[in-house]
Image (cartoon, rainbow, N blue to C red; front, side):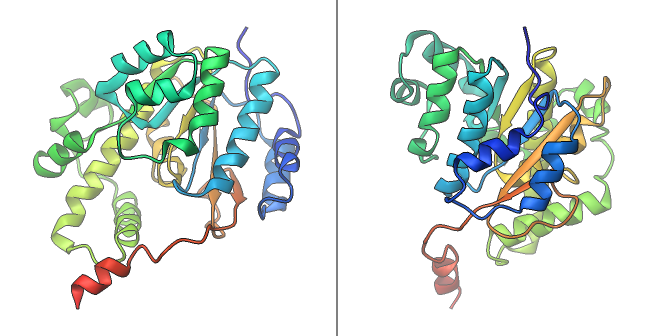
Length: 281
């Protein structure tokens, strides 16, 4: 039996209450979502990659539902698509998350942040789907365009022969500029927007491939934004899916970016822009 994530009212409040002292939560938003959201087939759970509080909150939410019997597939940004065979092998042969990480993980992620989530998947036999384009794929998109990673049918399905909608491109460009400390050469922005959009479309495709099973996407907040990211591309093709997006953010989010916002305290970290600023002097 497949359980839908939204079928229990008050779910978010319960999960957040389990960790009530750990973070600051935008309670009115969370309460409204928990009480009013329709059952969702697809849950998009964001993250700030190095924020432990956000990882803990998200894990508590998933653990609660899985222990109640829900069995979604997990699509993970943290594994590149070409490593799906390794991920399948690890899930069949590994008893613990450390083994899975050793077999299928790469060097780009702080895997200890994901250890509880991966262990949950192993313990409850939740399918793991490698959801990301690799850096090599992304580089090809930057250089050669969307045809570098999408077949002709996908190009038609997502209307990729045409220019991206102007508002989507502008919002993605702003996100990319901000994530590079507003120091990225302008000539590079268009290609990087294409690469980010290609990742979003690829994740949306993989989510659709899991039907009729419920799906959880584990990805950065930028990928789960309703206005410009995976939800936008999920809505482009039939059949319609019920989707709920949760942003685990360190600052207040702009209304409309997510269905639910869980605001978490930022960890103490060095200025990520310091080296770039120093190099620009």
